[in-house]
Length: 421
Image 1: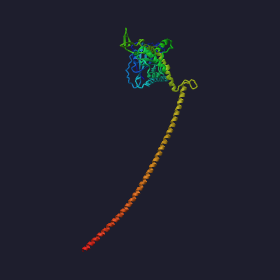
Image 2: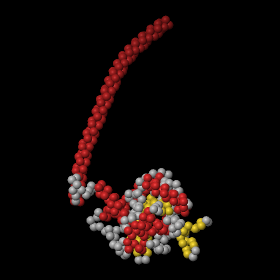
Image 3: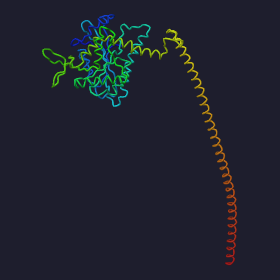
Image 4: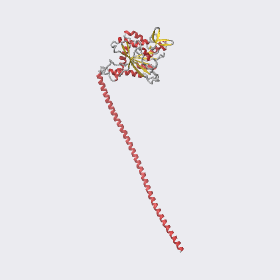
């Protein structure tokens, strides 16, 4: 699959050029891969902050507030600072929090993270692997944008972070922090961290096991969640141009640590802890997914007697198990087929019996009707004979009457003639 990678020129210094000093085993020629997932409601300032973090105007179209569901949009860019190349993938959650029913808004995000783990696992399980030049799309960090309400976390935020904390490194950030006062912001930070602890949400903690960065990371952990302001607009402050947001009442400088935590976030994310974020993704989150997936497939490290089991033994055991399962299912299907045939035969026999009973009933009705018709035919024949006899008697009687009347007429005529003579 051909990757859609855009090469962009940065507008200023970012800081990832120091990465080769941290990642000794990687070559400058190969470059580095870093994947950021931005989760937050539409219009909360995700794209603006990413642009500001990397001093680059990434091409992003303004998202609509009327998306029917949440979808994830990933875009990969190739950045270069000095002689160091960074392949940066930004994954944005389009439509997050815009639906009326937000109960399952986190599911597309979980599915996307799992899909990247699955792609890496499939590459890892190949006989001929190419992980050296494989584009690792696993999410290294999730910047979770929290609305600056000053009150408490939304149910959607708690539910989403709770379902993501075992799959990705979460760094919560308070977006548009210039909309609330410093005192309210400090109270808001304390309240957010308290709610996260009470709800068992595990956010990413900057590591303190390395003496070189332990002190600064411990201090930065105290500033979580970071209150950030993003802007690519430049405003003249004194004798130099700085990135800032200008208001009628004053100027909020993005890189002024007295105004917001943007510099702290950039330093921790890009310069100091990028390596640890990548390692945590691989050793903690990916390994958890890999272990669960392989256990689902039947692979284990030890057998029933707590002895080490080789991949070949596991494969053979799984093959025998699947073979037995297939035979069992075939036997169940055969039995089911025989049962269905018996049920069908019983249904056909019952239908045949009903048809035979119906035939006998119709035959009996037909016989009765035939007998009735025969009886009527005989009665009509008798009536016809009787009528013929009566007709014959009437004809004889009429003939006799006619003959008697003729002889009387002749006698009267003879008598009249004799009298005339």
